[in-house]
Amino acid sequence: MAQQNNNSLPPSSEGRRSSTLAPQSNNKDESSKKTTIGKIVVDRDACIGAGSCTALAPGTFALDNEGKAIVINVNGDNDKNIIDAAMSCPVLAIKVYDVDGNQIYPK
Ligand code: SF4
Image (cartoon, rainbow, N blue to C red; front, top):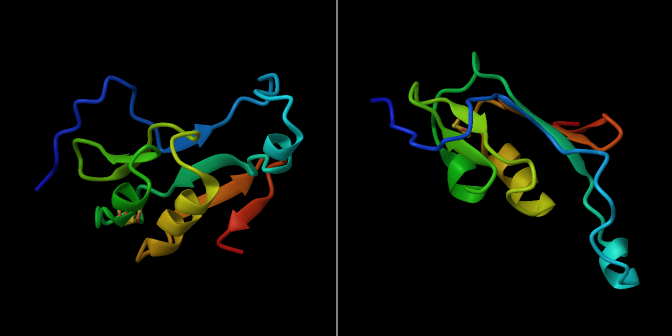
């Protein structure tokens, strides 16, 4: 059964972080923990709607009205949770890229 997604964001299987944002903090400890994920792609043909990605990274993934995963916000969760979500996908439908465009999961 398809789940209803009332999110107002347009459906997308791909999320991208803006590379034009200025650094958020001058704190050296914070900058040393810089985010490495720049783009997330969901293969909607492969997605079976298992939903584990939405459970582990609910700020990043959601199921659309077809019951398939979409990226709602690349900045929605920390990198570890996003990678964990990608690793949880039973069909390897989630690809994660760093800010330079290099695929970091699956390797
Ligand atoms: S874990 Fe994989 S199969 Fe399940 S909803 Fe997310 S992308 Fe689709």
